[in-house]
Image (tube, rainbow, N blue to C red; front, side, top):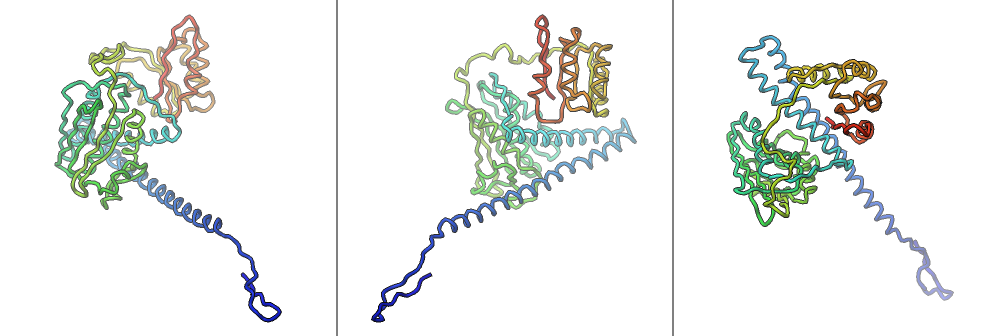
Length: 397
């Protein structure tokens, strides 16, 4: 804003005014607008994720409920046998879904750890292919496996490497038409193990080849197709492969042209080395019957686990709270204690400390049972033992 300056003779001498630089304010307005749009996008993705999660969790419940009715009304019939197979597939789907969500939580909190050991990556590929045969059969799809002619030794987590291959196989089946073929191949390439999963499915547009690995991304949104899925499988695969020092990428000629997903993992420096003494040699050993105490505030879960262990030949007792666990342990003298951590009254940590104070229970195996995603405090609570006794094994379910 300014005003003219006039001399005594009436001549125009210029303007007098103030100038305010509002560059920073305008930049802040632009930044705030971008931030608002970003937050709106995150909120939209969150709402879409929650809606998809509810859908994914609800879908298996209908066949499970119907299957229970058939098994209850016609046990031992041919229909009951068929519906049990359907129920098993639905339960496996729920387990994979929940495991994936727990892994996402571990990654966000930086709690995901690898348990590396020397292994032949071909074993993980074979295990994943065998475990997911039931995924392809209902859709009439076939899975072809082309293993590497030589061992592919790597320092890797066998469970996680099988998981990343499994994620790619399930993804290939989901986005491929019935009756199609999915191909899994493993080979050695320039000192690395190259794993490829190829399908003849809906394909991926070139601009989305990287975005498919984003958390909560979904191929159906990008390809305009209606498909199920939370969009976490490929994101987990990316993170797990990255933690192994490898890389993963996708290739596709476009929509309806199929896709190929590649995993490149570094091989061990001495690929010809034999596995260590802890490696599996394919042999199995039978476990002798044990006295097992199960403590779980969820009575149904405790009774179900007790039934499974009893069928396996073990002697089992159950308790519903910490005080009951201590009383049962004093008379039953269990060799294995499966202990729920989160209980009213005495927690699992408290029970573990009390059990370790009893000389006749100092060598019992303690197994932490929890639906929560944590285990560190349990290790501190349960590993104290007498120096003259061997340390007990502790694990988390």
